[in-house]
Amino acid sequence: MKTVTCTAPVNIAVIKYWGKRDIDLILPTNSSISVTLSQDILHSKTTISTSPEFSQDRLWLNGIEEDITKNKRMHNCFRETRAIRKEMEDKAESAGSPIENLSTYPVHVCSENNFPTAAGLASSASGLAALVYTLSQLYELTISTSEVSRIARQGSGSACRSLFGGFVAWEMGQKEDGSDSLAVQIAPETHWPELEALICVVSDAKKGTSSTAGMQSTIKTSPLMNERINHVVPARMEQMTKAILDKDFQSFAELTMRDSNQFHAVCLDTYPPIFYLNDTSRAIIQLIHEYNATSQDGKLKAAYTYDAGPNAVIYAPKENMAEIIQLIGHYFPSNKEPTAFFADPYQVVNG
Ligand code: DP6
Image (tube, rainbow, N blue to C red; front, side, top):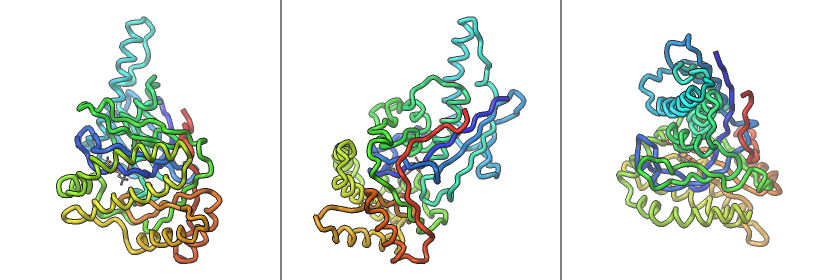
């Protein structure tokens, strides 16, 4: 039996992925950019064992076995990583130095998140990134991280961005087979250490409309979505990349807030509409704008962003974070203590 354990971090998009042009391959209708958060507090941890003694592929999620017989996405990840391992095995065989035929054995996967699953905290991103990264380590695949991300994309779109630390772009690609739809690192986690993220857990309840279902409904029914895909996002991808490379918080913050707002606007433009924000989420948006308006030099001091749920992520320079935590604590006293996270890379715990 061979066993490997790895962890993968959460990423929070600043230019949002919303919409697929190919549902099976998970090919997006626009490129996106995210920041990978430190995995000290938020991560998925996955252990995979493989053995000729196992009778079938099995998965335990947070200690409970899940039926994966109909889980196409997971099987795509198994199939893709096994195919690359098989090639390695065949090559080794013909070179006269065979390696173990791991690609023919079933796997047992145990995965756990140390935060609420499906509460809009990107659990599918870290979970599927951990799955595919652990498989790549188990099979000792000699492929680039972007190639690993191409496979993780087929598990959950946003997962491809969790393969890198720091600032990451998922390039939508042009090809029909998805071979050029993968993640690339814009800048490493060491690039902008002054930038911090604060997670405000407004609710840890499971979300009403899944991202997968929600985005397809938006694609089908929202006229605003065409404008977003064809005009708004392509320009923002360039502007955001530049803002990150220049460590320009003003542009970074404005683009982040505008893109979050437009993502929630296309949700509202979906018919029937999708609501991910609640009253507390909207109150936090207002609070951040009021806080920014208190700036002496007119410069933005913080930016909010929301995924498919009510929880806020606030990006700000380190120097403002204590003040922001105090403000949030003052206006939302019943909330649990918010926590600040640094951008940080993923790491292999035990290869
Ligand atoms: C709002 O990656 O969860 O968080 O590809 O269907 O698994 P699937 O969707 P998923 O969608 C994430 C959407 C988002 C924005 C983002 O992370 O870019």
